[in-house]
Length: 379
Image (cartoon, rainbow, N blue to C red; front, side, top):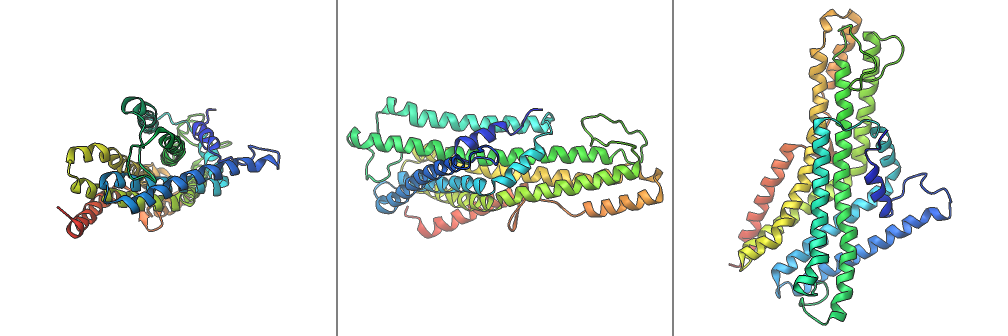
């Protein structure tokens, strides 16, 4: 059996989020925590320098300082993902273990894996081009000036800052990537389990149960309609609990991500509107603007998949051959159909993640930008 989450497990371990049972020695068990604390300290120091530079030198170079403050907010949100993954690592391991047994061999599963690979590859290319190639093309300079007023200076000052920025970026940026892609993959695997449950519900009343198929729940012993209903109800309750565990892991991460993303996009749009060189502003700010919307879209897409697949159960229960069932089975199916009428959604406190919510975020972002432009426009 292939572990679907094997890459995410290893990346989280690499950045100091160890899983229960990884280290047996009780003295060595705290080393990953110390390593994680060290990395988070570097990230927060970098974020603090970016905020401090934005406060001191905003009027010297507004566009570059906007880049700095948005980077600082991204680092803060990324660090929160590491922290909550570590704090709730036991629940995370339980969810991974429950969902890893289902192969993601469906069309949707392959699309999700393709999107994850594309997202990771794009981030790696940006890091390599920005922190590895750029210094040899344009010379050493401050990628995002932190505590200095200018980009230039002697290499003895710029090189330590460059190395510190590069290290912090290689810690902070993967935190965003791992947190976002892991959430999408967890929801994709949950949807695969829901589809298997739907297929099993469709066999109720047919009298043609086919054991051994990979797209239905494996039921041992004698199989009849009452047994199928019992197994399906148990599986449905189990999947709802898994959904609640995913919410428990990500509820604060999602809220922080949504708040920072909307705020950053508003600032980015405002910075572009105030720039003297519009083309240069778009060139510098558009990638992060698109990346932030892509992050929100991935969360909303995952929530939409979960909602649609749970809604599918209601139609499957009605579409099975219930008219051939006994009165007892019909009553059980009616109870099942009534219970599955209630929407099951991924929520971030009061927000339900779906495409409608994504549309609302885009609309509200433009509204907030319009207010900022009317109040603070200097052109």
